[in-house]
Length: 325
Length: 205
Image (cartoon, rainbow over the protein chains, first blue to last red):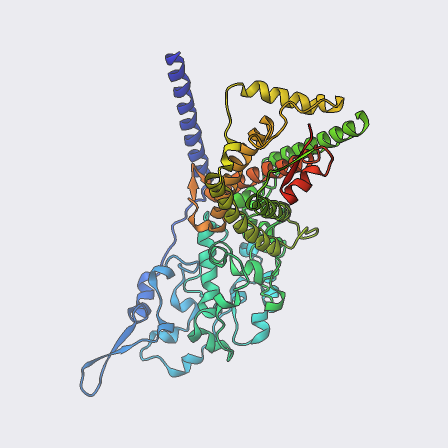
């Protein structure tokens, strides 16, 4: 008896080990091929010697002393973030004028026209999966663009020096939520950045969302764009930011079987994963729990069956009581 | 016919609040569990708010029941005497299944010292000291989801908490339906309801 138990336990353990190894092998096989990126560190260091620090130095021609001055934070590049961003293999002068290589910079360069996303990415087959043209159309219909066509560009949200594709590659929804929400909070929780774009008073996000139950949980687990952007079938992340009057207010839009989150936050993971049996919306269930959106097929069937049996029993009993008396 | 004072005021107050809150919790609970944007039974946020308020009231009301049972001695009716218990359960079940239709007398007529028949005693014990406390504890955990253990054997703690809450809630809902129906089995269909309102139970020999 004891021997049989140990034999079964060993089989189970080996089975689990085998399944784990098999899974690990699958993961490594499907992992994307990592091409080693080529960085232009030497070329970029000419700029980053100053622009990677919050200060810069120059010699005073009269006293020949070295003067240290504070560098405006907008002109500081975080090299760690830059060399892990989407544009990490770029030279500074790919986007900025070659004339910046002379120091002190020519004052006229301040008015340098920056490239926009579409200047490079439009019509490029290599980037077709990102739907840049569609994003551009959606963006042009967004409340941000309509508010100030000239000032509001892609860069306001996607700083080309730091931006990194997130939702497509991240396996952790909470991290995606944090990353994406920080993009919004970059302006909406920072009066200094906000006042560059608008004369409106800074809104208190916590107060504005007073109506939202479990506010902290929602903020940690759901992206701002889930409620504030129009979802659509083709884009992974919607860029049509809606006016506040059109933001999602009805809880059941997410807290229901046809949860909005399946078309937005979990879209990349959903693919063909909608299933009838077991847990409906199990993609959400893997990451978090949304009342009303996670339903179990068997539990539903069992509960409805038991309820019908109980009610039928009562009706039969009642009829027998009436007619047998 | 004798009239026996069966249900003191505190039991009647507790029972009324309990019944109303259970009803509110069932309706709002079903609405939340099966919420749909097309056919909302009750708007989700309203359902959540009413469910929370009813749940909190039910919890405090449960303490009245629990403490009242200890202080006023009502708990004795929930104490099962295991000797000869199962034969009595079968006897009571046979009465409900067959005897009642033959106009037989109930095998365990209730009186001041024995307010519940064995089947009632068993079901009330399971519901009031089993499922309801489980429902209350998991309900409060869902009210403060940040306190729930996040990872339970690789599953999301909130999901397991909710699953237990929903199952316990479903059992209590079924109990309530059966309980209301069985209350119509009295001398007259309305006798038990009248007794719960006035406190006086009619004993027919």
